[in-house]
Amino acid sequence: MRIGLVRHFKVNCPHKAFMTSEEFRVWSEKYEHAGVFKKQVNMAGIHWDICYSSDLERAVTTAKEVYSGNIYLDHLLREVDNAPFINTSRIHLPFFMWHFFGRLAWFFKSKSQPESIGDTRRRVRTFIRNIDWDKDNVLIVSHGFLIFNLIYELFRLGFTGKELRHVKNGFLYIYEIPDYRRPFQYKKNKDDASTFEEYLHENHNTGGR
Image 1 (cartoon, rainbow, N blue to C red):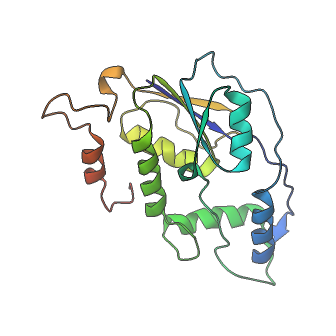
Image 2: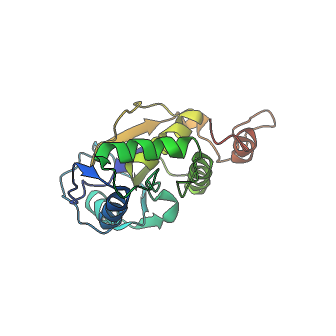
């Protein structure tokens, strides 16, 4: 079984080098509605049986370019919101610092972030549970940070593939698992601990860490 992950195309939303918290917040809102730069994506010559996509516009546009069949839109695949980790009207910080420290705040469950690491991992697991595991080739179009969390869970399930430090826009990443280890389809015998219910139980209240 293969799962292909594609991050949406690059978004056309320039930003200043230094920003206040309010400027970063305004930029983030503009980013949600900005257009994308379309490009050709190498889909590895694979016939993808089914495609799931975030319901955000930039992901939907990308999914329609890389997949010709029916696309299943799912809000569970939306990007993890990255809010300013502090509120400051006078201090201008480099753009990358707003992103980096926002993600750090997410990891440490700061109240500055709309979603915590535990919240994200739980919705990723909910999405994984709903995948059609009868399909051989499943394509997922989502967002950079959410894809990191998807990969984390796929590795926990026994999938193999590339470990990423950066998720490129409009690029296919493939993760595979042998059919005999395909999870969640059925319980072969009472000693088989590969059902999703057991997976959830093993990860209950851990935040996936």
